[in-house]
Each structure stands twice: as structure tokens, then as C-alpha cells.
Amino acid sequence: MADYRYLGLTAYIKGFGHKEVGVLVEAIDALKGSVKVDEAFDVNDYQDIVQSDAYDHLTSQDYLCFPHDSEIPENMPGHYKRPVIEPVRAREIELTRIYIPAVAKSSGKVDRYIHNAVKPVIEALFGENLICMKTKAGIEYENFEDGEETVLISVKDRVPQIA
Figure 1 (tube, helix red, strand yellow):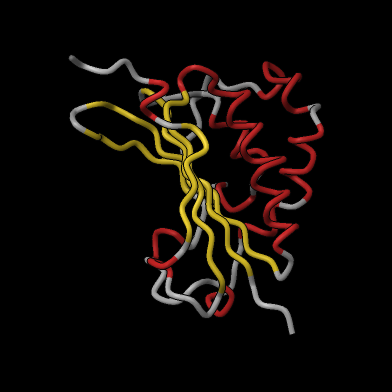
Figure 2: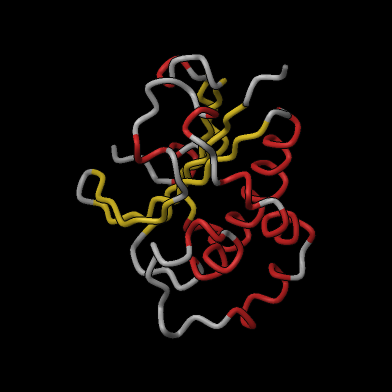
């Protein structure tokens, strides 16, 4: 019997109120109703992204974002169980946090979903406003805190350092 694999991606975007989040809400059912989309949002403005293979993969495999409690790592905080897009403040800087989890028995399936769908769509939507992106991996019976973190885009590379 295969183990359930967890891979969560967290991205931080400069500022609040990005209408681009509407593209993610359209693609991932788990975000519908929990994220307010800007009234000016029109999915037709993002046809290059919506017609991409990455977006197609994002929408067709979004069921990976609905893990059952028995499939996730032990002691996983509740706010990591479902996708979320929310405003946060870090050192008085306004940011939007995007978190997308994926869980499946196949590590290849969760890797492809996160790295070939979620990551490229977020990069295409937010470009230079994307200041940090990282993943956390785990297995259903392991402790969440023991999961492996990987930095995909470092804030040090995106934000000018203060002397």
C-alpha cells in the first residue's frame, strides 16, 4: 500500500488586492467562496495563461487540493489543510499569501501538479510582484514539522537589501 504524499506551495506577492487571484479561484474549486475576487476581474484578460498547458493541468487535477484528514501529515495545523489566498503583513510590508496543497498516493502526481501547474501559473500571473515561493513536503504518518522545505524563489533575490 502506497503512502499519501503531501506537497504544499506557499507564495508571497507584494501588495494586497490583486485581481489576478481570480484566475486561481476560477481554476481551483477549493478556493471558490473563500476568496473575494476584484469586481474588475475578467478571466478573458488572461487568455495566454488560461489557454496554457499549466492552467489546464491546474484545473483538471484540482481534486488534489481536497485531502482527507487521514491523508495529511500528523500534527498539520488546520490552516494548512486547504488552499488559501489571504492578505498578510510582514515587517509592516503588505503581502498576499497564496498557499496551495496537493495530496496523492503518487509523489510524481503531486510534484507535477505543484511544479508544472501551480508554480508556473503563479509566476505568469504575478511576475516581479512574486517575492518568495517555497514548498513543504511530507508523508501522511510523519510529523508535519519534520517535512522538508525547499525555497524555489528567495526573497533575498527579489527584494533590495537595506544597507
